[in-house]
Image (cartoon, rainbow, N blue to C red; front, top):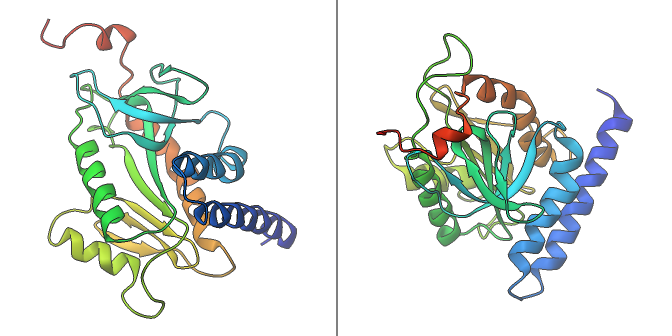
Length: 237
């Protein structure tokens, strides 16, 4: 452990949380976009590898499928180029997208259900056949994440992950990482939920970022590398 390194990251997280909480008290139509900008500007962009792009919009497949609109999309243009309509918004080929993050000011049942439904829709998008590396088929799918700055649950009662488990029932979880500020960070791996340790303030935010750091290369290597033509010509032609 390096105390200075940790303290600087925690200070950055504290600044992002304070700004997000201040925005949450202001009710206006631009709140969603402002929260997204806080996450990208203060947390993701400074801490994620430079080869990862960060955008927002829809994920598309070469089979003419579309996801729901995503708050944050983490992608790699080296796999197949994305089409940006401005600095960050656009459409992103499925094979290039590694993670999506839905950003909520307050997590409640309605928002959790909406995020779960969007993640389920994402799971139906079809990859091009093949993989980026021998022995890594089928391609690993997009990892949907949820980040909330607050929860409507009382401390000490039902936890966020228990609420989501109840929603999923016997189904596989569509959301694969759940981060709620001051509550915890949980990620789904090897058929079970795991909790990131709460060893310091805002460890849950660092857990989300650490999870992206540890898994982005693995996900990218499993992907096929379609050509631009694959998105211009029907697979049946």
